[in-house]
Length: 128
Image 1 (cartoon, rainbow, N blue to C red):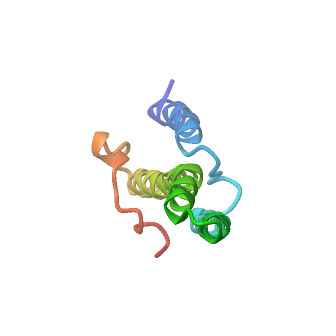
Image 2: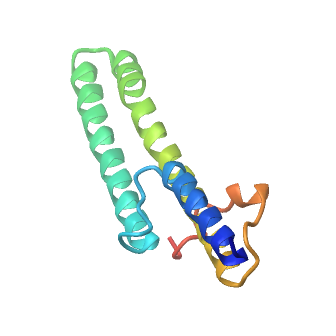
């Protein structure tokens, strides 16, 4: 078995690992910045819809004299949804940046970058 075969089999295993790590992102189908841009748009849409529904709940309960209850219900029901969506968005941006760093290092012949490749700025991929 040659060195290139070992490198290829290692990269196949790494790509499978990255496939699990990137979740809904599929780097082999289309560019990651395009996928991340759509994901960011969906996250904003979810945020705005949750804000709208929460505002309606707040408005209805304010009209009946309970603005505090309306605010609490809106935050309790929709807050975790919005926070979860943004956390997933930032996590996927960070993981995509780490994947692209490893891919760039591999194309330069450096191989796998190391444990610090998991981090990165949420805005480091595709100027998003």
